[in-house]
Image (cartoon, rainbow, N blue to C red; front, side):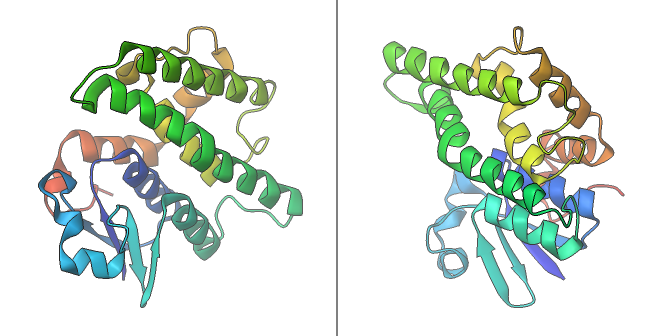
Length: 212
């Protein structure tokens, strides 16, 4: 059975959402990054970078959340079509999320909640960039339900996880109606509801799966 090592993080949420959407059976193994468990020798043997999430599937170990999403989608044949354009669009958004959205939003999180020495200029700077990223997503979602037209896919999951943190990060969707509509649609999906509830209820601290 596939093993999913994670914690209450944006990137772990992506993987749980995908697992619940695809119906792939798995065991969840919490790695408490607040206590430094990602640095112990057992976990470092799985991922020398010392980051969650990680999956282990029949001896195949994979890190990096977007790579895991693509692996799971292919494994379950979910959200992928025979169209080369579909795959290209998904890959484009996965790369964009990893290279742009994730780092931008991560900097906002750092300067708003983690940094020991606050820096108002840095926070303002990265909030502005993150807000521009939201506007870019908003333009793409004009007249279409999801990132790949009407096909809900791992591309949507990848970008939703950070968009879901907008209120917490002091970012706004007030002017970005397409993103707000898209985000709300994803929030109402049964898999998303279960994934968010799983982490919100802190059941992450025990080896337990969301109620099917």
